[in-house]
Image (cartoon, rainbow, N blue to C red):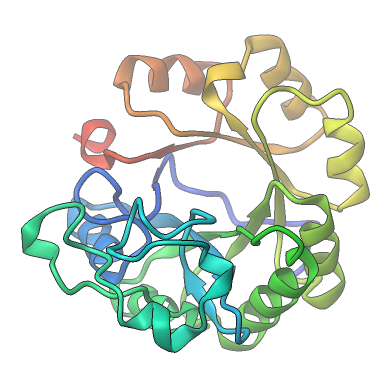
Length: 246
């Protein structure tokens, strides 16, 4: 793999697995996305207190598990005891916080590509990026399309660039930063992943003109998705892929 090139991404990418159909950032979510027919999923990876890479989004536990308190205060064994599914629906009771390696195994089983977001706890940007990038570089299933690393953290993307230069990178942004293009170039990113709420035709044209692939999150309205695609957005990251694939 070379960071200057990237396989085209599919039009629809499942957000945190398929967050509208199963608990986010779980193996059940990846399985649900596969059943819904997506070719790629997106998920978040954090580093536990004892330096294990796991799928998780928030800095606190209570929204998506039966735990309480700061994610960063927990080692892997304590996280593994949590129920990460019942909050979504009783049928998912007992779903566990998965490791990155377990997620890669699920991707291999279901032949799914992935956008892996580095989602560090505060102050752990470099350590998280190092662990995630090294794992993808060493353990990514060879039969799958090349992975994509993304992050809101410039420090994390810089580490990913240095540790695994062959794994392509995307800069994640919410509102349009003044220096978004300078950041993308400095970090040798191949794509811009932007909050769809702030995307405009002008911003889309600029990103495409400078050669960045453009993807938007999180888009659950098919009409909004159609508008973004008409502006040249390559991929829509969505909780409800079935609405866009149907």
